[in-house]
Image (cartoon, rainbow, N blue to C red; front, side, top):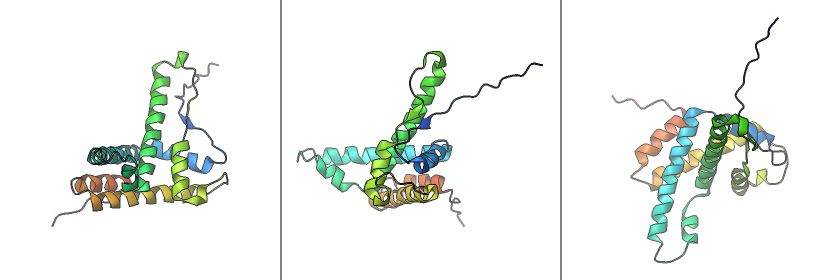
Length: 177
């Protein structure tokens, strides 16, 4: 008889950069978690505003490295993760808007994020296999560290960072008595 063929929407994958399946599997899940995605994007926006403010302050000194030195490395992980999420979304939209003529690879490059993780945690240097749960804990720990750093240093966005952190960690909202 007739068998109806189900049309599946292709998803965007991540390129394997040499035994990085452990990282790719974690990133693939995180890229499709709506609350996590929006939280990381918002944190990245806060960081970008902070960087722009530091650049303006240091414009007179003409010292571009001052900005990089003043920001914690954990901020770079958030910005790299946000950039990767945007790449995945862009590839998905590009494919879905014109699937017949799409001729590019449906895979994003997690290289920048991997390099940043390697800087923060030398355990991930090289091309050894690692445990997905360990890298997930590492990424979430780095994000938590960045949130704490933002709350400590940024009085204006304390509430906003706290709200984003609650979304990311699914903390129950505080109750007023």
